[in-house]
Length: 307
Image (cartoon, rainbow, N blue to C red; front, side, top):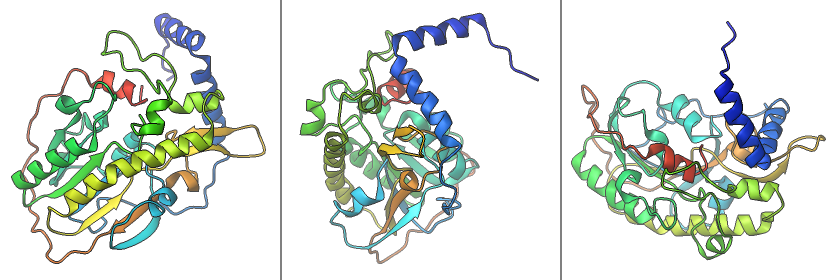
C-alpha cells in the first residue's frame, strides 16, 4: 500500500527546499550515487561479536587519518564497517538485547536504545557545550570512568563525538558556522560543513586539516581512558568521512557520510587492539536500567547535522 503524503508535509518540504537548495541538491546526488557505489568490499558482520572488553568509538574516523595521527601501542588493522552512518551502525550491530554492555555516548543517536543495553549514559544531556555545539572529549572520558566503576562486570562502549564535526580546533573555529544550534527555538540554520564544501565555500584541504585537528583533540582523552581501565580495549569507528569524492563518471561528488552508502573509502575504519594483561569478567543483566530521555534530543541532533 502506498503511504499517503499530507499537504502539510509537502509544504514543509517545499519551504526547506526554497530556504536551503544546497541541502536538497546534496541529497539528490546522494540518492543517485547509491546506485553506483562499490560492492566489492567485505564489512564486519558485527562489532558486538568481535573480541573486546572496552570498545572506544571515534565517530566518523577515517582509517588513513587515524593511522597517520595516533601514537598508541598495539596492533592496528583496517576493517570495513558495515555502516556509513551512526544510526545504521547501531541498527546493524546492536539491535537485540545486549545486557552485558554499558554504553557511554556523546551522540544523541543512542536515544531509543535504552532497553537494548544494561545502561546507556547520555553524556550530551547534561554535558553539552553550547559554545561549541558538541560534547568535548574530556567530559566523555570522565563519564566513562564513572560508569566503568559502577559496572565493573560489563563490556563498555565509549562513543566520542570527535573527529566528527563541529570542528573545534583552531582551523575549525576559523571556519565559522558549521551547523548553528538554535536551542530548539527554531530549526537548524545555515549549512553543515559538508553542504558548505559542496557549495564551494570551504575547500577540501582546509576541511581535512580541521578534521585532523579534531582527531588530535580527542586522542589524549582516549589515552587517559585506556590507561585507567582493565581488560582488552579496542579503538575503532562507526564509519568514515568523504571530503568530496567523485563516485562515477557522472558529476556525483559526495561529502560526509550519507547513510546506506557502500563505498570502500567511506567505510574503511581503524581497528586498534591495545596491549592488555587481564581480561574483565563479564556478566549479563536481566534487564536494562530505566532512564529518562532528555527533551532536547532533536535540537542536539540538528547541531550535529543529523536532522
